[in-house]
Amino acid sequence: MGKIQRKQKQPGIWKSLGRYVRDLWDAVVHGDLWVKASLVICGAGYVGRKQYVKGLLVTGLEVLVLLYTFLFAPAYVSKFSTLGTVKQEAIFNIVTMKNEFNDYDNSFLILLLSLVSFVIWFSFLLFYLYNVKAVYRLQLKKERGEHINSLKEDWKSLFNENFHITLLFLPILGIVIFTIVPLLVMILVAFTNYDQQHMPPTNLFTWVGLANFKALFTSGGLTISFGYAFTKILVWTLVWALFATITTYLGGILLSILINSKYTRKPKLWRLLFIITIAVPQFVSLLLVRSFFANNGIANTFCANIGLTELLRTWGLIRTSYIPFLSAPGWAHVMIILINIWIGVPYQMLIATGVLMNIPGEQLESAQIDGANRRQIFWHITMPYMLFVTGPTLITDFVKNINNFNVIYLLTGAYVTTDQAMANSQGKETDLLVTWLFTLTQDYYNYKMASTIGIVVFILCAVFTLLAFNRLIKGDREEMFQ
Image 1 (spheres, rainbow, N blue to C red):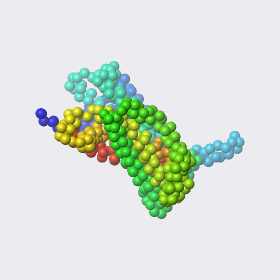
Image 2: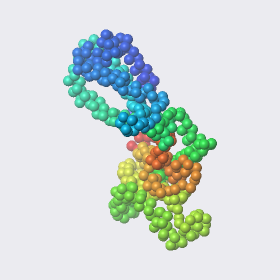
Image 3: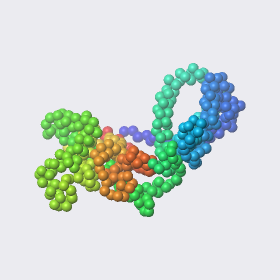
Image 4: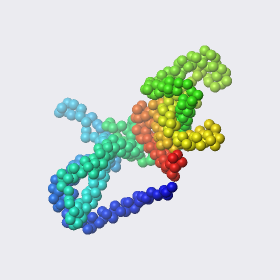
């Protein structure tokens, strides 16, 4: 068996950055007149190589950016440090006999359009640096006597050897517009006092630094409500994500093994019954279950008829005439996890079934010959193989459960907290960070704290994902299952 070749070590980020700066410096220092002219007029380098249309397009882009910079952006960027100072006021115009608004500032527009300006300038800076290096490469080609593409040849290359650029352009543009810019807006809002009392256009909001983070992480003084609620909700979010992931994952594997066992009759029928639960829309199932376990629902009626409700009240486990399945702390937490098992296990069963069918038969036969029983085979062969194949899915499920809005919101939408500190922070004991964030924005317009919580959720998911994937792909475990 030959030796496994080591992967070529990729250069670090600092080495790559250093090489990029060095190449740019060479272009500026050793470039000819046309390259140096492109430092002022971006299309000059292409005109000097007789690529007139390309030079005109690049210069046109530069002119558009300059017009945007001097004619539009200053009206907003100049106010970015204060986010506006002039409030909206209605002034009666005696000539028109109507109320007219003054020339007021809109803090959100100032924030948004200033950020858009920064993104445009940063993108153009990257294009500008790339353009300098590109025209320098054209100079080197001319000096070596190599062929310089015409516009028609460049256009054809976008559908041949450079087709990846064509394919990635629109997705990258969409990510910048619909993902990066909104994410940056959310991050910036977390450093302001944007809430119901400071909502444009009637009012202004301004920068407050780290005050919102202090309110979220401090449990004393005036910030006791948010600090207290954040701690409780964060702990419940992590507990929920852990149990929701592990229970459905192991439940799906065990259910798959049970259905595919040679002792199980009519496995296709059982598999079909569980698949039907996936076919039903999740929100329908959740709303139905919530009605089932409501304070006056079927479950409580049944428990009252058999005397279970009275027995629990005698033992001191409940103080009401019904069992608060989804309306009291503790009870609701446990019920949410149990209901999620019922909803999530069938999906995990399908994944596990596909993976279990591909376990190398030689390993199972060898284990049986060596005298291993079923439990040993499960823990030492089946589970390691499942974790190896479905590890990325397991990590994704954990992050998804941290942000599992549907299950929590639909099951506990009518839940009312009795904890005054939680109520002051517009949170509930059954909330996850993401449902708390939704309540803050949808019901209370508290965008500053919602953005702060959003940053915490993002950091939490990003750190866990990076650590988990780094641990998962560490080593060469592929050989164990070949």
